Length: 208
Image (cartoon, rainbow, N blue to C red):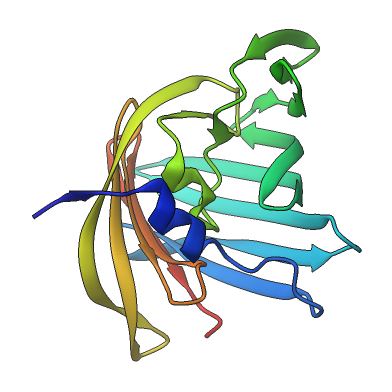
């Protein structure tokens, strides 16, 4: 049975990102079961502000065509709230540079130099931690496109991480964007599955 996630529950399970030691996460990215790239996440406490650096690189071949996806993203968090985000993406030659800054009136989003305003009760679709699960609206880390979503908990499951069965909570995001996500007891992402260009994509955490 699918159960809606409550804000109260989410408050208790947010990752403790402000750790004294940096947190390093790495994910294998697979298309139809074949490795095509890697994503790394580095989380660093900077005296009250938490900096998150995400690097994603994939290379995929479909028939005789080769495709690449390069993404770099920097996030700054304080007291569990995102203050700003800046990213660069090269999606097979299509390049974007979104920036997001939080203010009293909401988000100021700038994509390739063009600024727009967005409601403050939203977050970018950044999967490494559970903060996005409390939002009904998200936006793309590539081009700031808005997503209206619903979030449901599908219960406890085991995820294979490095040949070991690890307990996780299975969460599904549906609506304008769809993701199946599995989070560990530490609050960080263990596994994600979704469709991209009609192909099944899987991300599986390597460091455990």
